[in-house]
Image (cartoon, rainbow, N blue to C red; front, side, top):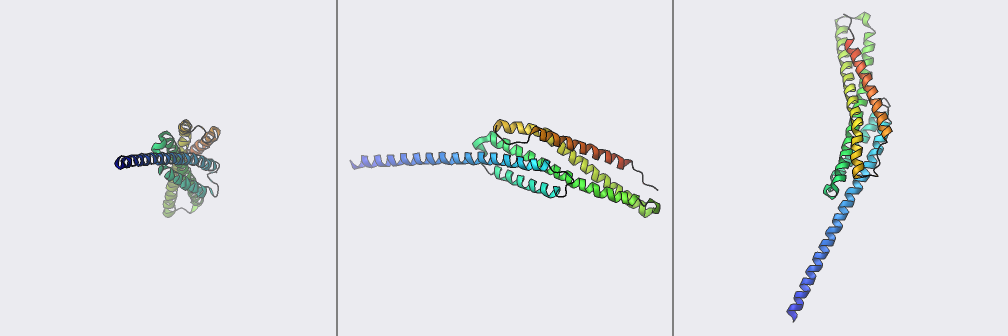
Length: 224
């Protein structure tokens, strides 16, 4: 009789072990799902705050570049943390959150590029204007320097126009990214449409201004 009792105990132990393993596996899976969803919700909300703050910055604000670089760094960290989560626990949410963070990073980087390029254009334009104001002293050295400064001003304005154009395009298509996030996470905290539209209009106006300045520079004649 001892052998059957022993077998029963072994079977019962095995069943209990399997049940425990299943329970632990379920709990682990639930935790990983919760971790992913928490990371996605938190990173989307925090990134939106960063985007809101960045869009309130004027390109020529004294601390604009430093603040934009900080926003870019932090959003990059959000993205790295999100990618460490188990995406298969909620694939639609994971993909929507990653798309949102990637889109935000691109917007921040292009706004940073535009801010940096704007500072460069102001510096090179001042240098060219100051040099041209001494045209009465022109000789070959003056002419060579004028050509060099003019070329630098043109390059800087071209870079500014390009950065502003790229930034404006990202702002234009940001609503598509928002739609995908809302599908996966309806209560997600996102930028107001009016905020995005206003930023897009400012970027396009600045791009057109940079393009006009570039055209003027290209048409500028160097006195000989």
